[in-house]
Length: 426
Image (cartoon, rainbow, N blue to C red):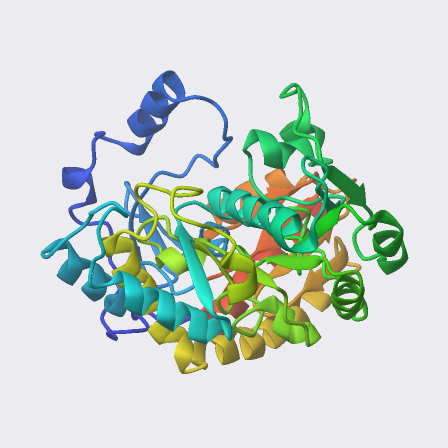
């Protein structure tokens, strides 16, 4: 494993000075403050991070970890990527917020450059991923009433089981995960849920009131569920034939993660709307967007939708830096080649405590035998060995390291996972 930073070649930060800049005297105190004064809507691993660079992070005590979660793909380009930080710093010294009552000099270029990257016409900038999904659903309904002429108040949207599109009331209304869904009703109507990967069920769910099909090209929160090869092309054909919008939620799968700019590309599919977030903010701030054709996004008129911070100067400057990084194809190629390496290494663990591996690009879901351990227990043991990952749905562990990770660092992480499995097997 290399001992230098992938951009500068310098030695990684060893924790010097992190306590002086922290709001707590120790990691233990930081955890106590969080437990006492924050809402317990997360259950983090007991790791208190204070510094990050590239694929590595350092806790308050100076222990280093290889980040194999990358903030659920928000850190596709690693911690503190120099080109992204340079763009942010330059903009911080100029202008950070105007509101959309005025133009600013970063807005038009950001929208143009992101639209060109996606092969689309227009961009609707927002902040969080959930806000972008909500915006796409509003656009789809508006399009349905104005263009498809669905009777007012009747628009329906088809979604998939085991989806995760966010945590607003509308989005949890069509979640099938009890933890996400239950005890938040009354729920928003207008959604039909079908099995993921089943094109026949999708066909049956569409009628004359259907304005959109909303899908994740890969279901991340469900455990990196990759659909059958025919599924997304079939969904595209069905939507085209029935005059229904295909909305691809690429918040986790997009912007290089899947070994292409968008996961849809891996299946030869172009949706009507992309929903983007996470990596679009470069690990610096929340940036999201709906990107699509002019005849769809063009249904919105002044005053019908908006966001005070959506498309702000700082967000646009950072988003432009991200687009520039993706234009070269370097990160997409890294995700594809390193993803093949990761998959080959993980397949060696099947039968050694792992029951199944699913992956696309540099993104993997690993099912650990439930009799051996929960995913949480595996992640706790991995953290003790210097690797950060995240569990989901019982015994599944997700790996989504930054795309800047080196091949030998990736091997080191899998070696640590193999060691954990050996310990659990006794």
